[in-house]
Length: 256
Image (cartoon, rainbow, N blue to C red):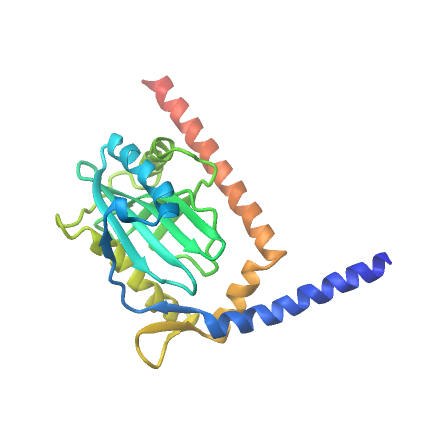
């Protein structure tokens, strides 16, 4: 009986590793152009507002100016993405609160990011979802899904800047055009993945679709056991990073 169980389990996993890429290849699309629509906080869908509105005052207390909320539309199938954007004009740090509406509910996270004049970006967020594609080599991302408050995450972000970007010059955005920072990131998503063979521009020129390479690799990374191993490795790396930051913080206090 035990042997039959493992054989059945292996068969199911095998089917998923074949059916998953097929489904992903046929359904995945990412828009080539992004046109975020401004939306008042009071007009956000109720489930989205619960995630976004309480964070506005928290970000403002940290010295961030509220730049408004935006409806980014359907970036992937059966989703709708809303983003609240903030800027600290003293440090040129940016912050976002993102809420993604899916058929299963709303997933949200907040992040802080700093872009430098050399093109590099350092980003710190609480996103629990790991990407299924290779990261942008110009963007160093740290994920701390267990951090519940923006203040705590911003402290971590500033320590990471001291560790990895000391002496670099933070770059801002022209006043009134800050949303273009987000637009550039989103519109670079398709072309960047096309360069590494994961995506290709659709015939209509309005969206990017997955190549077979992209579909298989993305699906396999999202399925067990690869998904479990990736989460374990990510959590370990972030625990080590936080421990090193704490040690550096204590050492700096002792020297002061």
